[in-house]
Image (cartoon, rainbow, N blue to C red; front, side):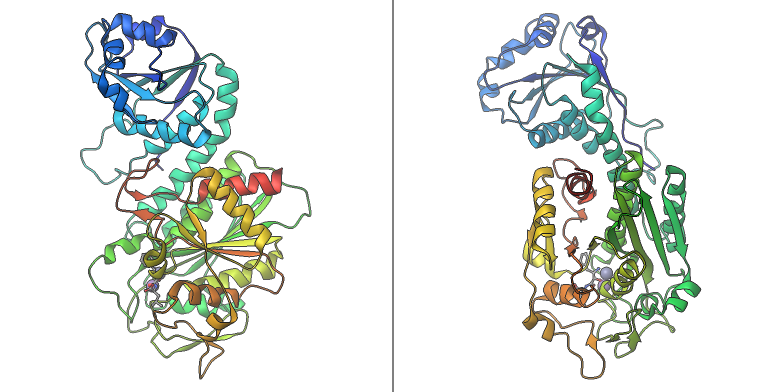
Length: 490
Ligand code: BES
Ligand code: MN
Ligand code: ZN
């Protein structure tokens, strides 16, 4: 997998500035005052820094952005990166500023003079997240990864302690991004399951249920999606036991469609390649589980992902087919492209039936309609439980991951009534994201606190974000980890 670049926290040693290679980062507030480190850089660079700080341009430099003074005389370094960041910046501002450094510096070595800045750990977290690059298939990829980062601070030990759990998170996010970025000829259902099985080594319990197991369990909904594919359908269960013995786990459930052609209800060619990301929900669940194991979270959490490929074929499910879910409810398949809800119906039921969890959150790149509604800024949030929902929304707000609650209700549920079965899998365009959520709700037990996150717009994007290059974002890993920490480990 793509590993996060390494960051070293060291006690400030200004001698090191003289010979530093790559780029040197100095942090300056709006007042343009130089701290000790900046003054050293200024002296060595023959006042290049102070001249810039006195200029009109610095006056216009926005908070949280980076400006490069390239190839300064008197220094070994290739550039001085001036980060404008207030001393009172909050965690998220510092994290995003770290992202701005990474974007400006690329792979080059970095010496960050953070001195007494309180947010050095957050800064390094953002720097690491934004340094992600998916270049497995580029022949001209650099032989080594990005060069190391040294952050000089006044309190290296406590900063490194703060950064510990962040390193676990970064690895979880990168794991998710890799899974989502992989093309479907590489990330087949078998390969996906194998990558999850490998997490056994981290202390997770990983089980893989094969088609014959799913048949025995009666998972006719999940199995119907994979009938046209040459790759076998699977359900993977990952358990992390870090909490009290015997305490009910929290469940995370993900849609893992490794490629969604639409099936017999074939999608148009234009943009179909984006459907490599249709396993994004399962990818986030996997990334969270990896993070929990890496940071030895004190919580019981189970991840369940349905892994399947939606292809057209002589054996594929047809529009009009009626399938029976594990719950026992029958479903009329109106549109084979509304396959995610079929995957989740059985995965949700299985998670509740087997684990009787304290609560359940599912994630899925479920509908194009959520992109019409919320664009690529926020995920759609649907819930039957206000308290749980509020705690997720709060975590998402804190971590800067966009999320917006949408309605549920009887009137929407009526739209998925079928003439011939218990329900149909598609109600057409009106309220497309909500009717999909209503469908899922039918597979959530009475009184089970539940959230459905429709991440179709945020899992994979065409433009870089402050903390990710274009492509897979890993949206949700950080917010879910935060929610688990605050709610279950508190
Ligand atoms: N995987 C798609 C949803 C999707 C669309 C994800 C765009 C990411 C980007 C899902 O399986 C799908 O095809 N949904 C249909 C449902 C419809 C047939 C009821 C849709 O949204 O068009
Ligand atoms: Mn589809
Ligand atoms: Zn899909």
